[in-house]
Length: 259
Image 1 (tube, rainbow, N blue to C red):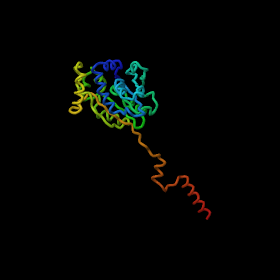
Image 2: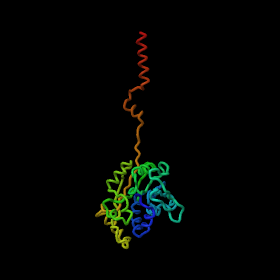
Image 3: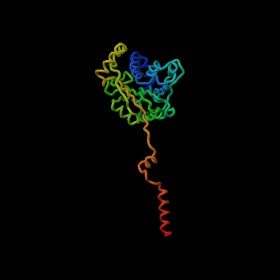
Image 4: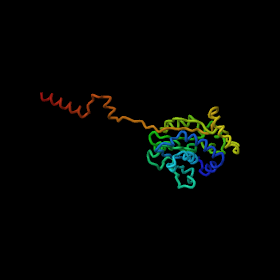
C-alpha cells in the first residue's frame, strides 16, 4: 500500500524527521552534480524534504528549477512552502513528462509502496537523459528501522541491497554506487537530533548493514547498435544483392540458349 503524503509530511516536520532529511540529504548532495550547468531534477514519491536540502546547494539563479511528482495513491501536498507550487499528482506508470526531460531523478518513499515498481522504473528510465542518474532511497530489510512502524521506513515493503540492485538492473539501469544510512535506532526522539550524527559516522564504518535505509545511484545507459543491413554487408563483403544474382543467372541462361 502506498504511503500517505499527510503522514509523511507530519513525520518529516518532527525533530526526528528533520534530522533524517539533513543526514540523508547531505549524501544526496555529494552524489548529485548540483553544479552541473544544465541540472534538471525531478523528485518522485515523497522527496520534498530531500529536494529542500539539495536546493540549498544549487546556485542562486537556479534554485527554482527542481520539480516534484507524487503518486495518486499517496496524495499530494503543495511544495515548496510559500512559493508557487512545483509538484503534481501523477500515475507512476504513465508520467506526464517528455522523453529525456530530466538528468537527475530522486526517488524517496516510492518503491516500497508501489504495486508495480518495475513499470514505474521503466517510466523513470524513459524521462531520463542518456547518462542521467536515478538516486533511490528504500528501507533496508536488514535494518532496525524496517521493524518499527512509527517511522516511514517501517511502512511498506523493505528491500535488501541485492533485491534493490536486481530490480534496477531488470529495469535497464546500471547501478553505480550504493551505501547504507540511518544507523541510530529509531528511539529516544528527544535525543535523536544530537546523537544521530555521531551514530551516522560510527555506523558507516563499523556496522553498515544495520542501517535503516539503502541509497543506490543508478545510470541510464543507452548502448549504440549497428543497423542490420550494415552488419550483413560487413560480414559478407563479396555478397551481391539478390536482384543482381537473379539478373546474372538470366543473362547466363540467355547466352547458353543463343549458342
